[in-house]
Length: 73
Image 1: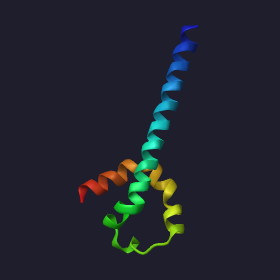
Image 2 (image 1 turned 60 degrees about the horizontal axis):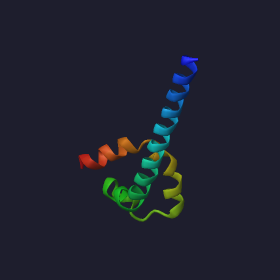
Image 3 (image 1 turned 135 degrees about the vertical axis):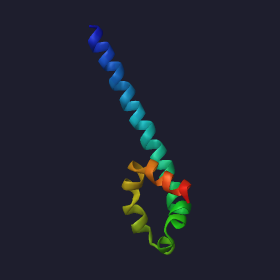
Image 4 (image 1 turned 120 degrees about the vertical axis):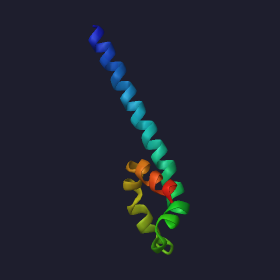
């Protein structure tokens, strides 16, 4: 009985942590598309909306790496 409750607690904690990570990624994506992408690479200044949509999933999942690169500039 103790194993199932601790496993359930751990599973709920991991799911909530992943949800927070994805939510932070979505907020970072919105910042990155409108402000950060232009600072990181000048050639993305005149890109269309489809490019910004395509890079969405990658920037949501890899937001800590992109944030590190932006802060390093």
